[in-house]
Length: 344
Image (spheres, one colour):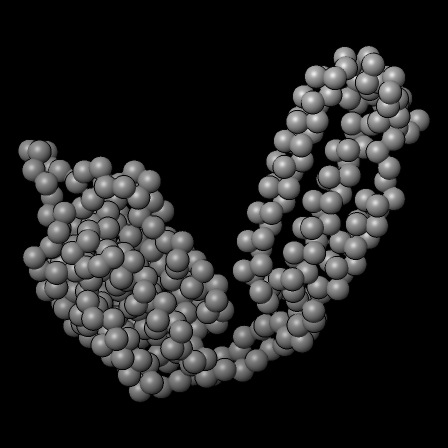
């Protein structure tokens, strides 16, 4: 199992294509200058051992060496020991609404980004609890299984968007049905489902499913995102608004948060409704609920004793630099036989 200590250094890998582009420009410029003083045959006679292949080989070696040295700065680490750790916590699954109405901007920056901010902050405040993520619109899909890997949870969450579910609409019942099968520990005494949505629901059996979930020990908490006034649904092209969604009559669709549906679902699910428009208050409410919940003991496996691996990449990088120095730009017999660049 690997982890990266300083992933920001990977941005420096952009240097490599820049080096190669500069090399190509320099190669083209030299060829152009040479043509101004002599023709190709004369240049071949003046420098018969000059190898184009070797030039490309040397720059490739340099680029590879730079890549290894940059990776060494990021300091990859490898877990050498797998440990089983006993924890006490609850299972909390987030059901994130990714329907098109969630891109409405009546809540800044928009409903979906606000929802992701709230879930991220809640995850950051978790202790030894397990977390899972479901996304839904017209259908529901598992985004992340039950896990204690909060870093992975936040990473998957940030990538969630409205294009992940092709069947649009808002079917909260799909999220609840998915959650009924999502928890993998039937002995867990406290299982929570947190539905983060604007409350639009196009199904009729949602409340019955919420009651079924409550009977199976799953408490449903709903977090409402949006305003009663609502807002239009922007249509974007490369993050630029090109219009707004319209109905069959050509009128701009205004989507409003349906707070009552979310309240009803929370009551049926033996939970609580929370208005999510004020992030600090929302996080404080859910944190208080989780702290008061009874904790169950469970086992989880994770890698430990991570050892630095940067020295290998430094070694390979330095070795390649030495190889580059040793490589001469003159032709060799096997290169002449290959004649890759028509150099004979």
